[in-house]
Length: 141
Image (cartoon, rainbow, N blue to C red; front, side):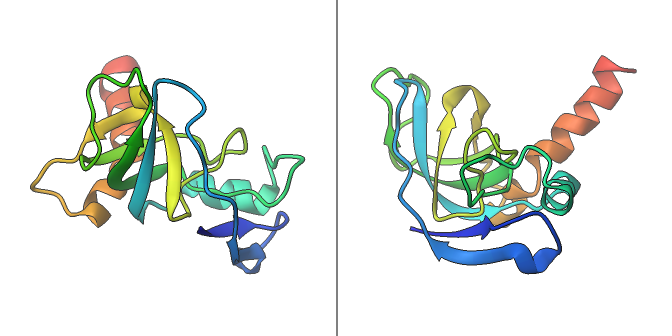
């Protein structure tokens, strides 16, 4: 698959489109998503610039927000099926590949069905922003 990868810490020029290995489901509760859109957050810029959490194995795929269509589900996934339109916030900070790619694998706990009133682009822009708003309103008051 094609992915936008970070080849080293630095300016936007360190991001390059490369051919990488397709991700695979490794856990019974994971979902393989064919991405239609990925959000760009300040955390992505900070990680790229500082190299924070940059994995030993390069290149890294950034991007914690995404939206797309489920291509495959793990055998114990309960609330989703192939073809569902979803959005989510996960990874992209070095532990596992992020969403600047054609495909990504996400734990079902971090996935929600995309509202039909939202486009994929709108849905991909929402997760981390909404989590931050929720935390400021309800968790930290």
